[in-house]
Length: 248
Length: 323
Image (cartoon, rainbow over all chains, first blue to last red; front, side):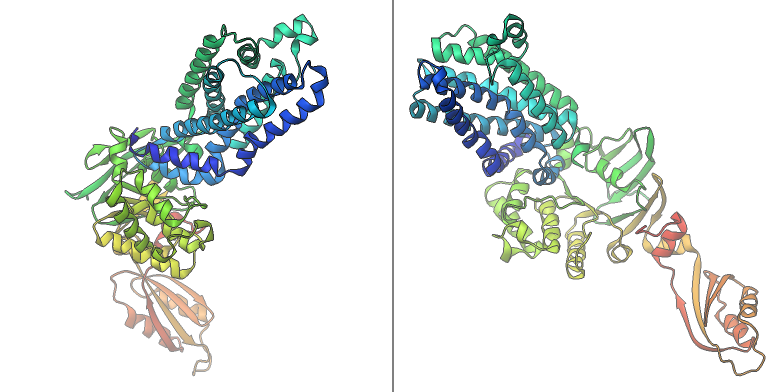
């Protein structure tokens, strides 16, 4: 792969993402609105209303990070982007530049917006993300990367944005429900709580809550390294399954 | 025949899709500075061949040599010398013409002053210098097609592959594009061109390749194809149906008489016009005239019709090009 054109491709992908009002809204307005509404509605069930905001800020943030898969599918195979991307296949940059650039672009897009989101929520809603916010923010990076890699991998395997979006949306929702994004699985008994650990969302949720509430970093490195390894495996899968025919 | 000036040498390409063989030993060469037109009915294997030549698709067998080197050895090096005009408009609609050109040219390593110059030149080539700051989505179909070509040649490739670049545009834009292709050829670029419009082939081709069922069935200049493959000469004889003599011989008898003339291969009569197909090279016009007159008909008009590429194509493939 000739890397000469890669910065230009990446810049173009970033530009396309940041000019997409739907994706911008989905990653900023949508989670803030949900955190406010759900926190306000359930505030009475918590010792302080800020605890409710904190719970939903963290869970919806994790949901958003996994939903980065949908940003990636949109960035990768959306019709208006796919057609001009044909020229990248014909250029010295080659086919791998397409998926690699989309993966990095959607990761950066989601990461920047989600970091901004959490940095707004901390002072606005009085929530805590731990003694050192940078630990929390640092752990977000590999999880975001995993979400983006999952989306690109889905497109490479399923060969269509629509199909990949449908399947990934279902997969992410299942993982989040199982992992306790919308309700605590612990409240549903020991068996369900044990099953919830099959979902990576549960591990990620637990780690972020441990950092935010208890400054407990026990799971930081396992989750950090696990997300990086899984992302790398998905990237290898992208290289293996990406077919230029899907673009022709 | 291959010569010292061969830029691209295609040898025995084969390709299968889902167990169906779509290319069967396709081989040809492209010389520097020529415009090679590839023709074929739908499903003949044109697009597959083009996709292999652009490096977007791998062949199952055979190889493509650029300047004598297999393109698969160093695809990036090959692509630096290649410009591709895809059949679909491959542009960012939300960007301006200039921004599109700058982006696509930058993929070939152009920076700074070189990029500025290449962009200027390509805008002027496309006749869009005055619309450079307008978004592509505001352009007409013809303007988009012109920009689609400009984006492929901004980096001055040696070889340009164009896959039906004039689909669905007005005659004015088509003429602009065809003139542009001849300008590219004159500037030393080599062009491979596929189209469904025979008049375009007539206008721009240096050589023609006809593909059918995944194989090359004919190759040559338009003149040589007409000459060697058709081997026929058509003559239209318009007769006066109100002959002067009473007891006119029926038209059928004229046709029968014409079939006896030396060199005549077939005769079709349609009302007052008789289409006489003769073997090329046999001088028999005087005998055709005599034969018609002998049957009591007066000749109102007589035209010798040259064999067209359309006829050649139809004869070789059994299809009309736009079927």
